[in-house]
Image 1 (cartoon, rainbow, N blue to C red):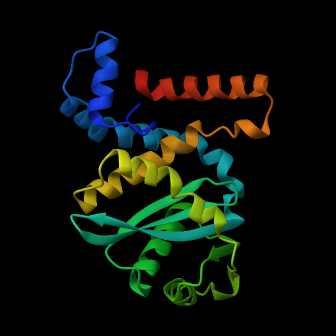
Image 2: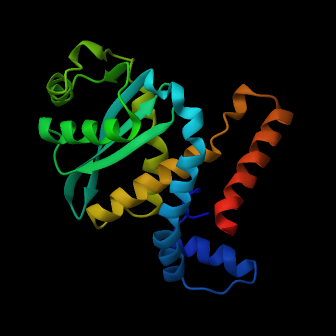
Length: 212
């Protein structure tokens, strides 16, 4: 509940108390740190067969995040269907940071056919460095998919009253992206009956790693 919904630790503590489970909010924090990455890793493993088409087009974008008053940058690589492929936190958004982000993503996912970015020059410089400048696309609205991928994270950031450490931000962003996309079922594009089937399947798949 803590990762999936915009809830605070104390919100989850109160919800569990109503169900007869008396724990501290610090226990919720420990569970998230201990089991969140395991669940996210299991979700990514199960979805990897469905992500073969994700190499077609990547949307790359960054958003600033304040940590103890200092600006950091959360980079995201999103495919054409909205699947978050990689989240990476850096202290700068220069060529070095963009290049490190691209290499990390390509190492995990393989190269993309098209890289859609905004007009940030560091992205273009990084793509030239890896020999992919001819596959870059920029435009006023072309990268809306990448920019919109930050909205769920922003809602969680407000609920959590921001982050205190860069490591915590990196860990949470990675877990949250995997869990959020697992339950994003695009209900407006399917019938109610099909939506119920998809939701039941997603919940059953989610309970698998929880039980294990």
